[in-house]
Image (spheres, rainbow, N blue to C red):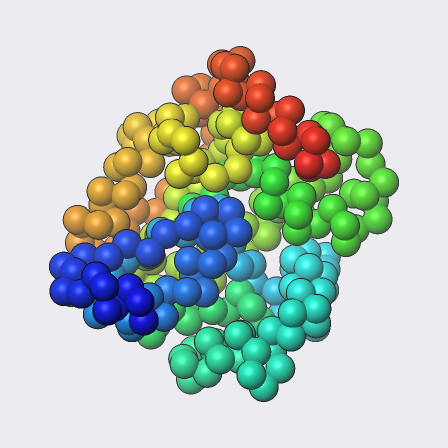
Length: 253
């Protein structure tokens, strides 16, 4: 409401966030859009996927279901006045309160003229660890490092694919999924720099191309899933990389 009152008559609004803010931008999109009433509104959700995870789904197929069911209970997400109940209620027939991931697919149905893009790295080591590490004993028991990372990634990539497949039917949705970069354990594409976010096999030099297409393009926003590791994203041993890895190791991820 404050945004609508103090920043009226905007020609274009981009709702965006990274990591937990990727979830937040998805969840808050309707409220911001409704309040600001811009001529054009777009969504760029970075590295905070609301995975497809039906409440009664198998963790073998939907690994995020254990996290989702924990937070839906702890935070009261789907009680009668819970935030998920409220959000899904805005999109009758387009979402399911028993699947938090259905919100992602509900948005492009509710706003078919808005352009939306979802970003992630395949080798994300932060959001994936948050999603699985405390919920799968074999991951929690594994030593920190390559062994644990491999166990996490073996769940993460297939779940990313399931999430993306649920978005493909909607022509106003794009996705951009490079392999990795050595910044913050391949977590987030919009943090600090767009460097190392290109996908050479589709001639995209960095995320800037994707953002420009989202805001100024027509038709379906860019859709790209990198199938081979991009040489430009290999480690460069920069001081920033070293510091970021130290910080996240202290965080236990």
